[in-house]
Image (tube, rainbow, N blue to C red; front, side, top):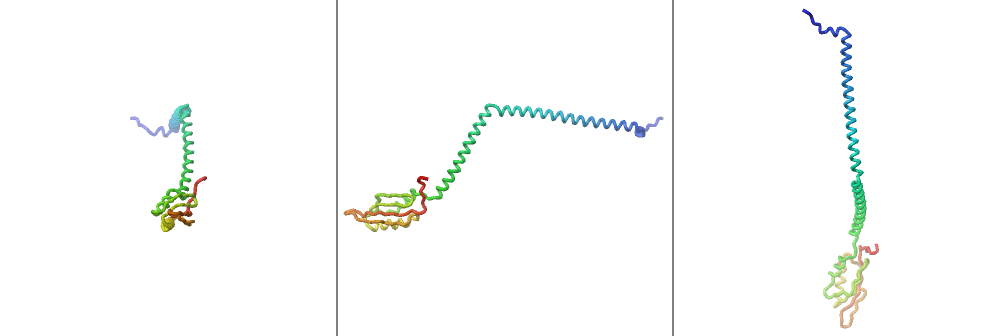
Length: 188
């Protein structure tokens, strides 16, 4: 019977170098194939991306999109201008709110302080003072009106210039008072 020697190939150096050579070639083929496949895959991806870029550029550069872009830019400019106006209006509104302006509130306070038997002939209100010309049936009604005006916080320096009796009629008076903490916005 014949003996089999499985280690014969390893004993001789010739067979060992052939198998190393074979393994080296197989590994080299695998590496080259991997590099080749990766390169081809990258080239295919690059071509596809370039095609997508070209189609996107064509879409973006179309006349319709350019017109829409111009419209959007115009709308954005209008919005910026409106926002600037809004900021200015907000500041003006805040200043107006913080300041007291001669208005219906003061006139309402003055008219609500009028006694029953006192009547106005004229009422002049400006940014600094109020001038009233009126009539009263007696001096005590006029004095009561003066006293009522003193109770209004925004009115100071109440002064009745004169009181005179017209024959057979009521007492005629002229009153002047100053307003405090009130600004006028006329001309500004």
